Image (cartoon, rainbow, N blue to C red; front, side, top):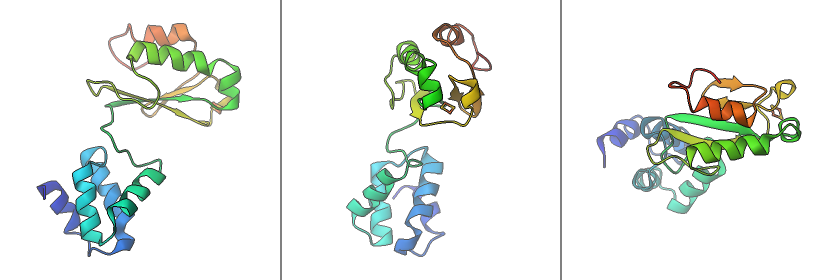
Length: 153
Ligand code: FES
């Protein structure tokens, strides 16, 4: 068992009720839930692997694949949709050369969507890491990728 996982598990008793906090720590340590570690967590908690996998896929917070250093979340809520969210998403897909739900090969970006990010009056909106970018256009998205940093659009 990898040392990182051992360090996490030694803080728990191996009870099934500890599954979610253990998975949260594993994800925090690895950035996602690697399959070998999920198998070890199943053994440790005495749960079937299918149960661990079921929990990992049920909750949005858990990721089964490596995530990019930068997370782009395009809002697809109603307000953003009517103001062109689909074109914004398409522009990100084209510029990043990945589809929604994918991570770039260099692990620089993960592209996702959300039902609403809570800034409807500023639609269409995108979250880039912890920052909301408002009133976007495909042109502004294209400009984002001509800049050296992801500080602003
Ligand atoms: S619908 Fe996009 S922020 Fe609410």
